[in-house]
Amino acid sequence: MASSGKPPRRVRAPDAAPARSDAGTLDVALDAALAALDEQLPGATIAVAVSGGRDSIALLHALGTRGRAHIALSIDHGLHDESGAWVDCARNCAATQGVTLRAARVEVTGVGRRGLEEAARVARYACLAQLCRESGANVLALAHHLDDVAETVLLQALRGSGLAGIAAMPVLAADVGETAGDVSPPAGAVPVKLWRWRPLLEVPRAAIDFYVTAHGIEHADDPSNSDTRYVRNALRLQVLPAIARHFPAYRQTLARLAGHAAEAATLLADVARSDLAAAAETDPVLGDTIRLSRWLELPPARQAQVLRAWLARHGLRAPSQARLQEMQRQLGRAAPDAALLLTHEGRHVRRYRDWIVVETHSAATATVSPGEVTINWQGETFIEVPELGGRLRIEAEHSEGAWGVARATLAATPLVVRARRGRERLQLNQDGPSRSLKNVFQEHGVPNWQRARLPLAYFGEHLLWVAGIGFDTRMASRSGERLGFRWEYHQEAKCFI
Image (cartoon, rainbow, N blue to C red; front, side):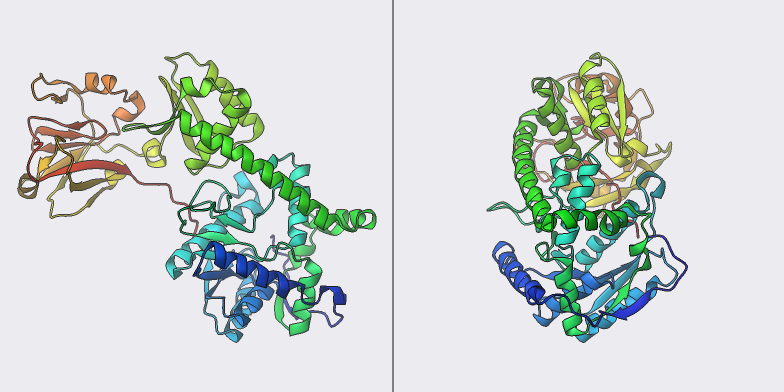
């Protein structure tokens, strides 16, 4: 990925074609993959990720000739002085196929924590997902091939990865920004917004070389691909040729290993989902939690799988094995009244009473403003309150007996939203006394770290509503046309653009 100081070379495929045994391999594989895609996701709108290199240019050309490339997307990381020329190469290929190309430049951040290659990958996929949403595409076509699979399996094995890592890349997978993990769509599944599709996983690199040569397709050549300082390049250029001399079919063998690992990982994921369903609990204040006592009933290996699945559900990558074991140890051994705080991927994981909790990004980092926001409601569903890191959702309350504020009252009375200042009192029971908000929080299991961040709504100086708790019955109604309130923290941004 690092700049070599030389401009990228735009070249045609070499004149010497690969062996005739590769003829037609790409076309046959792509037609089969398209048939399978049409069966699983009928009417898919396909966006093709195109770097300008040989593999992605070949995929764009092959899909374009079949009328199945609806849009092409190209990302410039800005890591090479002449990387814009690669985007131009992708644009030229798209134009020959009558396909519109959208290009974007991304800022690669988090290099110190992730490394350059991983940071660039994260930025690239975040931007591709955003462009797909803007373009109306629900399938992102990627040009990974059989050699990529073999390299990934071996690389992950050398890194000591688990089954999910060795399983490498599935043909069709939910985008990680849409669902937790790379999981092919089961029968009857509700479609997600975006799928990653890799139709060339059974196609060797030599067959792509043949296709590019046969069609005279111009493509860009990234000089960093020959830089053996990058571990994948060293594996491809130095290690795998030695393996091929003794195991010429290593690509297919490692791909079979990836398939076996994927089957085993799917079984483990099924067990983890079942265990998580039994241990998880949605709390009105804490959100999506794990009941600690239920989690502790599981064997250690299944505890680990549940934690991985639960963290993924919160949009977090799986911790390392050592980190995961340490999280298990601390969560399991901490005293019930201990204020246990763990940090993973910049988010807070806490043990509170009998719950394991992940704080939302905004809740964990929001700066509480001492001021207040006055709202003159004019029928909006959402009221943004950036001072408290979220928004107030206002919608009709239809549940029988549920408390709400009369629509006419809210339309005529300014609503004041602010953080807690102390000495507040709330009457939740119409026939009971008002009680200090501190006692109400304790009774409802609101942890100390959240109390100062929960917004309070007032009519003048009269407390009307507390997020996660409810309405003051002296100020609200449970009959007639009324409105309910709900607080939503802003979600962490997933794109680096």
